[in-house]
Image (spheres, rainbow, N blue to C red):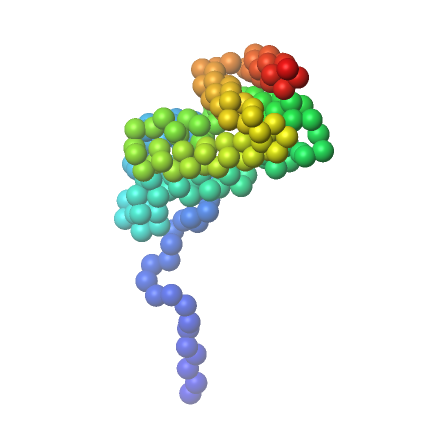
Length: 197
């Protein structure tokens, strides 16, 4: 008689795919905002129980950190593709603002920027996680500008960041792509004038 050893993990198998759960949670957080989504909302949407949720993510902020990582890889504005050293800085910054407008208005059910909206949430851990992503993007923009306009880098980065936050807020308020692009292009003219002066 021979016996076959069955290998593998013991216990109940996971009833959900954590990566799919993060994708689903991303849409919830983006559509409603971090503060408006409860653990109960997440577990109900995923069809899992709270112990499975806590085992997989630790807490709501832990899930949000995973969501931000996924957003950075799949939905965030591709700064490295827009801030090109061979193109004029003003032209690239206009392209950046226009791309922000397009992305923020792409899904009316989940408008705006997940990161920028997250920087204003009540939960300190989640807010700080979102602020780290925003700061990394600002650092990349600042370095790009400083390479050719070091004296303008700080104030232009602040300006671009402020416009992006405004575009995100207006998208969440229901502004469509035409209005957002008009604002982005107006801001772009201000950038061009600043760098020409």
